[in-house]
Amino acid sequence: MKKTYSLFILMILFPYVFLCSDQKLSQKTKIANHQECVVLIHGFLRSSNHLKNLSNFLIEKGYYVVSIDYESTSMSIPEIADSNLSNLQEFCKNQKIHFVTHSLGGIILRSYLKRNQIKHLGKIVLLAPPNKGSEVSDFLSKFKFINLILGPVVSQLKTDQDSYVNSLGLPNFQFGVIMGNLTIDPISSYLIPGDDDGKVSIENSKLENMNDFLLVERTHNFIVDAPEVKEAILNYFKFGKFKNE
Image (cartoon, rainbow, N blue to C red; front, side, top):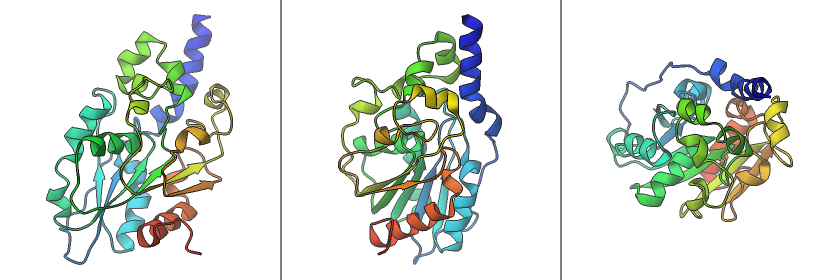
């Protein structure tokens, strides 16, 4: 039984462990007076390299991009938020600041904005966010050795009502959610009721006060590189909706 559980856990974690990269991105030039700033926040066990293509796309479209890098296994969500988001004005100056987050990155941003204000806050796009938690976290948090290895974030993303993510309440900023409905992770999807992207259920990505919602045929990890997602992000920044119709 223990061997079965261990294999089950390894199969869940495989996409994270072997697709993770430590490469970091940076923009050497300073923000111009006419530019708007976009801050990218990656997900759990990832780095800013995971959002490299999205970063390059936004730079080509004229935005000044700041890619946040954080270590996700040694600190709690509030600690990650405070240590990485408190100095954004140094990069973005007095320009409007938009955000695009992936997965855990959205919860980190929600945590920070619940307790802090950002000057000239623009629009926010949450990609595949576990806004109401993930059943994968419910499962993994049962194992002490997993909690020791992966840190406090795992249990903070549980779906029960008294978990950290469900204590955040509704955001007080303008945001839209883009969610995928495909999975290449049958093990994780087995744990998740209803349709999912391999890590988060579609239902748990939603919040009742989101400004817009877009469902795309993408998986959890690869949603960030989808052309239709990139275009939807641009539309949201410009028009406040994902489809300019």
